[in-house]
Length: 242
Image (cartoon, rainbow, N blue to C red; front, top):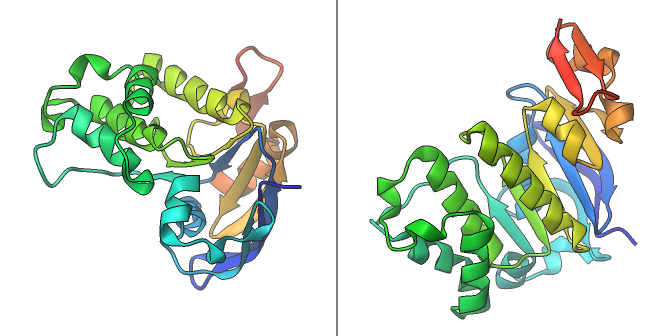
């Protein structure tokens, strides 16, 4: 049985009807040009965007879950975040435990270590760089120990070292019979780490499947309007404009 099943999901004016499924243990990359509908799709899955169609989670309609249950199962990392208060890093990460109503020290410490932000746990988050803050917000999501992580451009502000570390971390999360769904612009990293890709353009699903089936020159030309060189046999995969 699929962990998540999306059936004819649409948002008027933003997403045309699309359907796909995701199994436990998989990492799904949502790719496409700016304005394709990537963030909208993630927001639908997170329950913060109204939609038409059906989303099933573990065989039952996602809409039947109470907000607290949904927050326990699905951890959402938006593209842009900020703190209205001058919170310490440890305080921000502790917020990930709100759906559970506790302050599980082991879960918080694990999230701090996984994202390599434990060294700053007593520092105000506002004093960190944008890339460092991005890892703190990811730690908040991981502290909640969700079954599914929904991450909108989680590596956009990271340097090359931490891009790889975060992608590996999200990959390991999925490997533990959970799932990761993320939007990502770096097609080479998407090909390297994801089991499945969802290619969107203009709110329409152009292709869904394995990286080898989705990342064809024809599909990428249709989505991005440019000629692309694709070499998935290269280690790591190489996808660049011609």
